[in-house]
Length: 200
Image 1 (cartoon, rainbow, N blue to C red):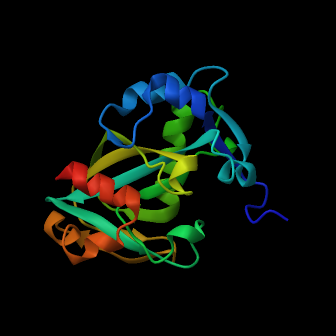
Image 2 (cartoon, one colour):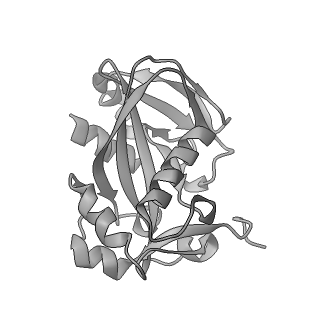
C-alpha cells in the first residue's frame, strides 16, 4: 500500500519546465513559470507515489515565507511531517502540494486556493498581512529536489502572533537573517538556504 494513501498532487512535465527555462537555485521571475504551467494540458494531477519517484515530473510546491519587522519565521521539521527525507531540518517555508480539493489543475485560482489551504492547515495567523510572489526555486542536486519545484510567496505580517497547527512544526519562532546565516545555516533544508541567500 502507498505511504501517500492515494494522494493526488499537481505536477507539470519536466519538459514544460525546460521550455520556460530550467535553472538551478533561485529564479526571481516566478510569474512566468506559473503562467506557462497553468495552461490547458500542462499542469495535471497524478498519484503522489508515482510523482515522488519520477524525475520526468515536477511537483509544484507552494512555499510561503513569513516576515515581521525584518525577522523570518522558521521551524524544525518534526517526525510527523510528510517528507521523511527532510526530518530534523530547519525550514523557513510553510506550505506544500496542490491537490484536487483545491480545484481544476490548470487554473490560477486553484493554485492560490492551495496556497491558502496549506497555510491554514499548518499555522494560525493573527492580524493582517500582505503577500507577494517572490521566487521560484529548483534544486536538481538531490532526490527530493529533482521531483519538486517551489513557488515562493513572501507574507509580511502586521503582528508576530503565529501558532503552529501541526506537531511537525517544532520550535516555531522568528529569527533575524543574521541568526539564520550563522551556525544554524547548515541545518537549513536546501530550499531554505536558497531563500535565505536570496533574501540577503
